[in-house]
Length: 210
Image (cartoon, rainbow, N blue to C red; front, side, top):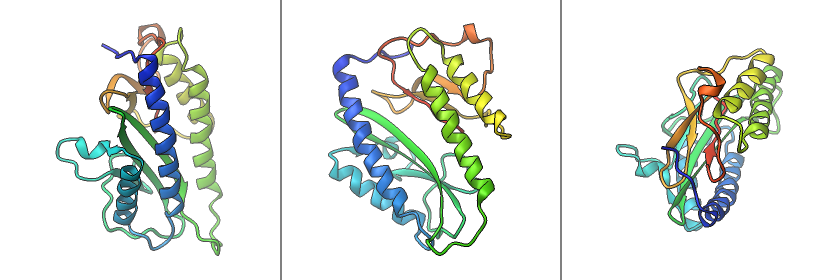
């Protein structure tokens, strides 16, 4: 069963997303050479608390961090340990916040560079740009009357057009009263489009390009 949110719940979630996005940007801005992943995690938790939120990820049984941070070949669910970032690392920071009783979820990926960097990172920049374009195309079709498969297909087409491949074992998801809700949102069309869930008004989705 896919939860449908009320207008008031959606209003609360929109405010939560605004706050979490500001937090994520501040943490990403600190992702420079020599900083430890654990320092970024502590910063995220502190900022979430200042925004009158709770770190959603710490509510997952057995998980004690406010973020998931992946570097280079890591995909998702990386633990923010004491690894020190290096020039030309690719870092993904994923965080959730419970605000007003509802969960919101944000993630972004950037290239770690200092102002003095001389490394040629064109291929990495193309990779990151492909992800951004895929997300934009997915958001365009995430509307009532379409199906989850339209989102999956938009991501798959854009990623493959750029010469990359989507991860098949991981998905986006619904979000709201719980951190992870139905429906699952794969990054590729894994079944007939008309067999995928219908998108209805009031659904709140975390679209993840992986």
